[in-house]
Length: 131
Image (cartoon, rainbow, N blue to C red):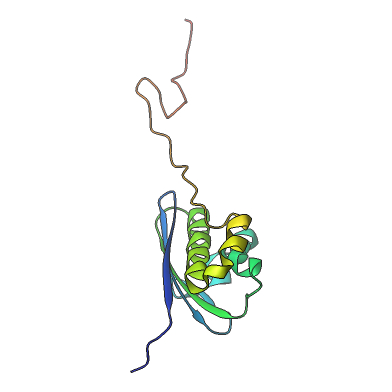
């Protein structure tokens, strides 16, 4: 039985998690079993997802399956970008300097700021009235 050369990686951003399966192919990108353009309707989110592939000029060489859940669409797109970059480095470690200088291997650590007591939200206070 032949060993399939599927590469898998994980990307996270805020509450979003994207599991990536990367294999050699014709450039088909599916997100949750739906085409990329159908899932991410905004063009800048589509560009965000394919940015690591464009950085190494191999847009039509890999098929990408993305399983994204949690968070919003932007968080899922950025999580997918990180996962694709990690899978590409796993495929060819010589690509790491190119992908790293583009900034695609860094996980964004920012999250939601917690709510403080005595405030309505994290920073918003209750309305103040002198009288």
